[in-house]
Image (cartoon, rainbow, N blue to C red; front, side):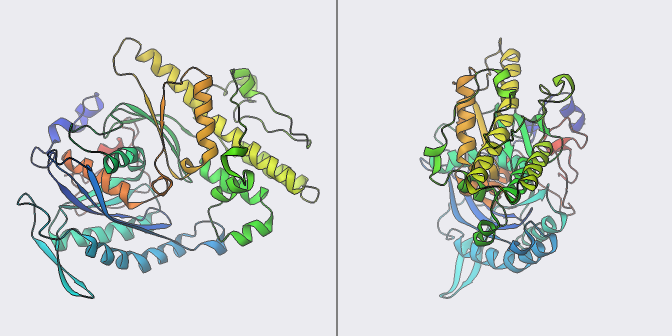
Length: 459
């Protein structure tokens, strides 16, 4: 019945709302292992009577698997890293739990005795465990989920399996809570808002309507933008730069190579018209990059609500192969800059389309979109931030506020899992202990799997 009502557009959140927990302090331990990052966090939210801050991170650490020799994420090497590092991180997190005397009588459970170099410490037991359930690499997800189940059983507390992409979308609400008070009980940004989720595995433009209702406006039809940037970097960057970097995700490396002196070198001016946006720009080296989907037959796909990066990646690969011996360092820098510009303007073009459609839809309604949340690993790119801001200003959307989490919270992390788990727990969601990791899990309720609420094993 709940699912039927949901697909008719009715939100289940008010019915599930926990009157007992929504407005009091909650403490959670969270685990994130969806890909190559092993991360653990301890987050505590304040009640409405507390002035500031609205949330506090008592612990947050991350260890990234060393996949350097593979030049990409190797599943078994990554799983080995999770198995090696997750338990020690949890042990460190336990010592960071608040002292048992620091919470009032409203605390749900008894204290924990935690061993330390100074003897046994009395710490508050978490109210629930939050863990990434999907989407991601199944073996990696299972490593974190099974650990979380063990903690939930041992401590006899609820488990909340979190959607990784939902967590990225809600990260700015975590940042707001960490930096502000909760006197008015309002979390920012408030719904509805737009989310641009850009990472190595995902590229989605999402209309975030409620906590669990995130309608996908556009998504990639081939590869994610983070994957495109990594592969482009392997072709563009000189071999010695890659070898000396010690990195396996080359997005940051390509940005530093393209703009070694930072944002002062961007010199970017957004196209003022759609025609200018779609035109090729001569490079002076005998090549020019076309905007994705711009040169399909009769331009039929140029206005499609889709992202595509594989064609752009193939063009860059062909340029580098054709000019490998003749390509100078200056040409490589120019190609890096042009690759990022074209890719980021492609993101901006679909954003402009969405805003125009939503502006028309909300023309007679008070709930207009005023915020764009940009999250995921690629969101830390400073050039992307300038391209989006400049395109919005130039195309009539200067009023849209851009929100980027700090770089440490753009990439995969357990803090965002802790926060999303807290919001879901407050709204009445708990996971059964028999829940399994989910490789693919949409955030859109209109998707075939029913989105966040459509997953099995919700209590």
